[in-house]
Image: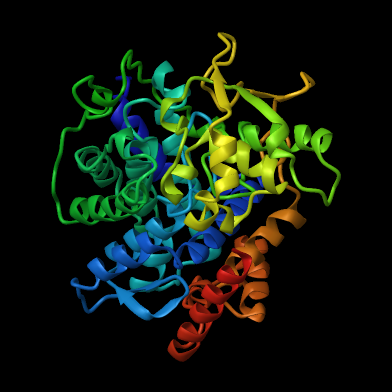
Length: 481
């Protein structure tokens, strides 16, 4: 029997995986990912980048439309609904992170909610259909990231969701729409030509577009494949194909379907407790511990007595921002997160507002920060650590090292805390009853007979309520600041 090409192996897996292949652990983990992603998306509708993306997308119209989460006043063609929802999910860098490094859910979930609503079928799309397609999209991303050693480190060239997220989105759409094996293969080939965005746009308003574009381009790839568009049938096999994104590219065929082993079964994701780059969570954890040695619980940090702050971190240059000038730079700044935690004793959504970033006390602390790069501290979310030392003017030094943090896959968030994070994020746009209904629906997603029950709740409040909620949210942020 002739060995399959890598690309055909992926297409066979996308086409061949069934709901019966899902394990209990994969179902439970993916439901947690879905709930967290919905919450990040609802919160993200309050951001400037979301408003710019949604205003742009309104120039497109279609007889077939889908919901923009939490915004019943906006309906868009499914490709652009997926785009805008993807942008919202990543607008604050509050979405999940996997290893090898990527944000897996944001490129996939908006695709499935858009398609489930825009393309009703008989029988109806079920919660199990959504779970299967979601996990196919996640799995494809994970398998592709294992094709190169370079991809296992925090990236330097391409933002991974723009690369593997685009193919994961295409895979999920292909599965959800029931494409044939051949058309699954074509969808992957088309998606590769949509993939890729440079890391230079990290810490800018453009970075969230990477997730939105991955979602949009995945749907487009599946639709174009359905219409008969063709691409290179060996696109994943070739160094000039998908290999163009990674050095030392070494692709492998997927496991046999008869004994399929999901990567999500082996490797859980990390859920963030505050909206910033994942590597800063180690810094926050270490800084919180040092702070306990410097101040009593309710006292102020003695800034004038601090002589020097040393952070021993991995060499990740796009998270090295000594004096961030915007919320996006602050979310990608080891220095800012360390100083904000030392000063305030906690990091929250308002911590990244410009009025917080530009406080004189923060700027004074930032001027005292130095970075060191221990050779054993490699830029991998699976192995990195952060050590912080604060030296006072009297010579006393307090040091703490964080090897992990609460929310990392080694120390996962409890279901209770994950739901509390969702409530905090989603309640900015939804009523308490809708928030609780969504928690219950996602908790029992595999038993949901009709996905329209889910997509109806995602619409959010009526248009008059939207303006009221937005005003109340802005007032609450002003008060917190």
